[in-house]
Amino acid sequence: MRNHFKARLQACEPQFGLFVVSNALQNAEALAGSGFDYLCFDLEHSPSSTPALHAQLAAVAGTGTACVARLAGLDLSAFKHHLDLGVDALMVPNIHTPEQAREAVRYTRYPVDGGVRGLGGTMRATRYGRDKAYFAEAAANTCLLVQIESAQGLRNLDAICAVDGVDLLFFGPPIFAPTWGTWASPAIRRSSPPSRPASAGCGPWASPAACWPPTPIANAISMPAPAWSSWARTWD
Image 1 (cartoon, rainbow, N blue to C red):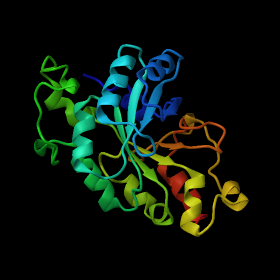
Image 2 (tube, helix red, strand yellow):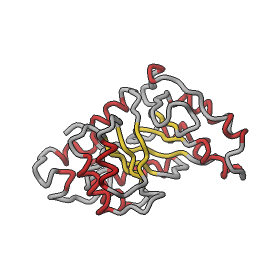
Image 3 (cartoon, rainbow, N blue to C red):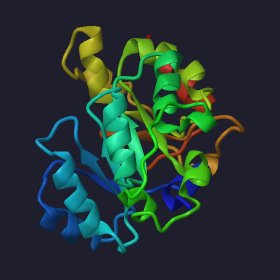
């Protein structure tokens, strides 16, 4: 088992994808054949469910398009359900502190790897028991994306980046506006992070980063954590 989506993140390769808020498996199937690197199924802001997502994952299987699930929050049972479904990555919203980031990592890992994830047997992630190496390789192949969407999160950016097991930081500049008591004002938009190519490189401990519009390259930018930290200080 090898998580190619995670491997490309670690190599700081840009990946292009879409958020999916429909729970129709036909939409997922059509999008998966359209050349995107990944689809992010939004369980935070859509009426989706675990059975609906299971059908969508089955529709995407074999296309080469990675599947990311954005959860509604930091909830152990949701982590367990969706990892057992075999998604390529989990995105967790509203991570404000390194302690929350470490808790998210614990939810993704089995006790032997320092986590609290419950052990399942014939689940989709193990190809219903056929993947005998799944449990031993799970920690290395599980991919965790954390969403930074508050002033507190930006202040803690370096510490969150340093948490072992956090693979990517996701930024949505318009989402920050309410934490400053406004609604995506022009000033907030002007403060959005600069676009830089993945060739800028990632530091030895840095988490790559993705950014939601209004940046020209959405959900695809990999940047070293010190660069994001420097940008974040302009918000505070």
